[in-house]
Each structure stands twice: as C-alpha cells, then as structure tokens.
Length: 284
Ligand code: GLN
Image 1 (tube, rainbow, N blue to C red):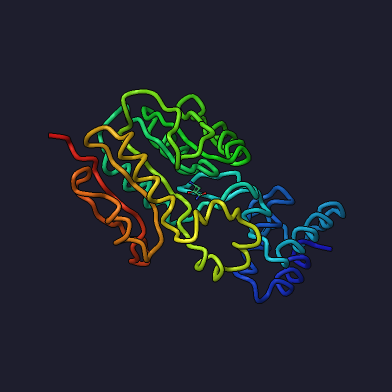
Image 2 (cartoon, rainbow, N blue to C red; image 1 turned 135 degrees about the horizontal axis):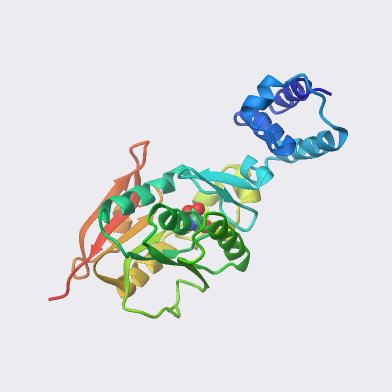
C-alpha cells in the first residue's frame, strides 16, 4: 500500500475521533521516520510491510482511544519535545502559562533555585532550566516511573547537571537542604473524584489517575503545595501553581496574608482561572 492509500484509509477509520487527519499524519511520520514535507512530496511511495504492520497496530490503539502522545511516545511543550509514557501525564498547553509567569517574574535575575513539585514528565523543570542556563532546580515526584522519564528528558535537553530529581511524597516533609528556593512551581493533581468521572475516556483510560486526582475534593495536593512553598520559599520568593478553572478562589484562600502577598489568579488563553500566583511575604 502507498503512503497516500494508507492515509486515506486510516483517516476514514478514525472519523469520529479528534483530528483524524493530523493523527494519521503524525503516525506516518513517526513510523516512517520522515517529516511532513517528505510525506506529502513522496505520497505515492510504497510502505514497507513491516512499517505497515506497525502503523496498523498503532491505528488500532488510537481507535481504542489511546492519546496520540502515547502512541508517539512524545509531546511538544514550550517548543521542545518531551518523552511521555503511561507513567506520566501528557503535558498540556495550559501549563505553559506557568513557564511564562516564572520567566517574567525573574526577568534579569540570575542564579534562581526552583523546586518543581510533581514533575511527571519533567516538562516544567526541564523547560525552566533549558530556557535559563543559570537556573538550578530540584524536581520531585513520588513515581519512579515518572522520574525515569523526567531524567531522560533532562538528558535530552542537556540540563541534567542543573536539575536534580528526588523521589518523594511532597505532601510530607521532604529531605531538602539549603537556604530555600526562589521559586516553587507545580502542576499538581487537582481534579476531584466527581470531575474525574466526567473526563474523556482517553484521559481516564490511559493517563495515570494519580497524576490527576489527589483525593475526593481535588484540593488535597494544592493545599500540600502551599504548605511546602510556605516552608521552603525564601522571603520574596514566588509560588506558581496550576489549578482547575473553578478553583481560583479556593486556591487564593490557601494563602493567608500573614505569609503571602500579591496573591492573584492567572488566566489561561480561554480566559479561565488557571494558576495561583503568590509571593512569600517578608517577615517583620
Ligand atoms: N508537571 C507535569 C506536567 O505539568 C506533571 C503534572 C502532573 O502529573 N500532575 O505535565
């Protein structure tokens, strides 16, 4: 079968799923090891039988609802490719707002020390280190499977010497030493059990539940992130935490004025409440 024939057939089979033509193009490029330009320019070329079998197998997985990022084993985040697998959440574009807010707040400042709680694929920590070559960070996750992926991503983007990975439960005191962090950043699990039940099958059946749901209420881990940030940030340091679009007020309420200032909620591109911004107050 030619590339074009497989593409037409596969796109038809995927009708009813999200962006079928894009998914098929990505699968073809991935399996054949070519880019989109080559795919279009040489669409009449025959697909070798081994590659066709691989493509058919991936197509079946997509039909069963598996996200394209897991089929490819990667997803782009802030302009870089990140490896992902079933141990890690797939990075979301909303999370890029945390990166932008961090880069803006510390503009012109060198030697920042950051702490990423629940690093997953490592997309936040690795991106910060890659964007700012003088920044150093610690990235924590409870899952050894996730840390393996995050470590590989740090290596792939050349930041292994500046991001330290720590396997720990951030809802409990962590073995962290030093004089505190300038930035605590996190995209913690924040979905309530009720909201989880209403999520797409592609998310529920394939992404790790522990990366999405912290407990019945959804605020259990956001609360732990605030507690960790309160304890570990330097005075004047910044807390950035992603949350659900209905949790803006509840997350601001986690930050009492005695400890925090400039507490506010950042919006996502859809104009919805998306992340908490708070500065650790100087004690008097
Ligand atoms: N920090 C990772 C991300 O933003 C993982 C988040 C998570 O697993 N909750 O994708």
